[in-house]
Length: 199
View: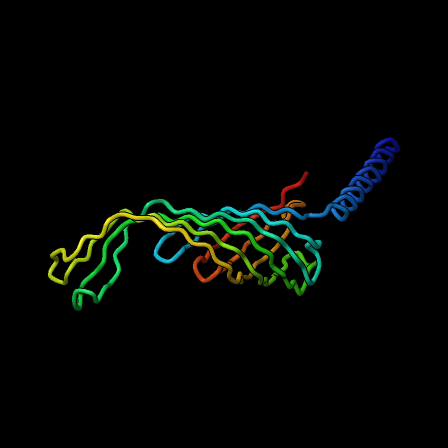
């Protein structure tokens, strides 16, 4: 009986020490790099977004600063939009593909940075490079006849613009996870889920 009691006491001390060490390690570990993936839209196109974000300041601060790099890509998609060019009821039909690459800096406000679930808002500036490839298309009159055929083409553009969004950060098993909604430069809106990358 004494041996069993001694074993219980020793195990309790060991587990307590391990738990304290893990808490200290968790408290010392600085989650700075987040990787994320999500989906969203750019105009008429739906696609995927991959992102990497580095927190210049620790994430458990009320006011934060971070830098991000993101890529948005869509498969080739068909679309139809209304057009008054050939009278009421006419449409333009085409297909195309879009890709974006963006780099920016944002500031964040987290009212309760140490809470298990931490909501936050962020905003900043980003430079965004856009590529769009059009497969050609045509204008169709209201009666269904084709009025004009447009050739295939591609275009590229770069611009500076605002980044605005909100998110939730929470911990699962010692790892930080986040869910974000962001609008970028007025041409891209995405929903993303991310997690920290530890070295």
